[in-house]
Image 1: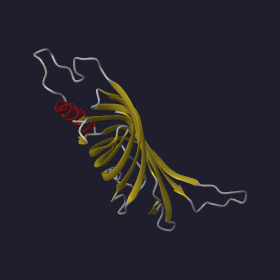
Image 2: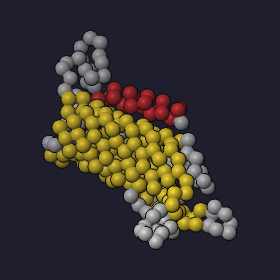
Image 3: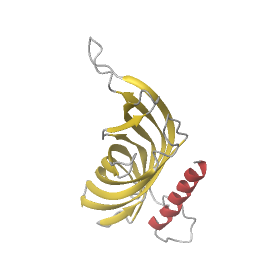
Image 4: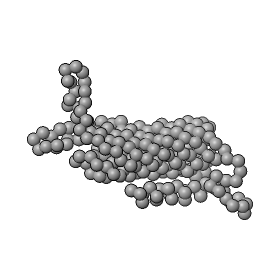
Length: 212
């Protein structure tokens, strides 16, 4: 997992070199030698993972942050599982139960962009952080006084999610993007769940609002 995170950071650094124009013979920096221009944005994202426990699942994501010199964004972001995902968990052969999965993750967000002033351009978002997952037995819905839920198992995990987006400058303060990302989730320990069960590709649609 550490090798994956190191690779993603190196990938982001390499991608940023394409966003810089050649200047004078002076030493160049990743944010240029002139006054730094700052902006900001907030974004709503919907993603679809076609294979999560052999079924499709939707996630809703939010992120926001700062934009430096139009081409480099950083901030915070995260996703939550919004689809109903149920699993038949055989805690014992005599008493198997259907459990519902709840999952969320988030962390630091980085996004270098190539030629951001062009109407259509490419960006490389990277999310690095952590998350949590929980199995709930929803058969315990009525306890005589109201509804309740029984937690069966839960765990925390680290996550790295690199991606690539095709982004469109719709109007000055709104951008739309479509793309794909791959989630690497490590250190996962859940009963009857593979350690790499949350790994996988997903496809997203994102709307950004801000000062670009």
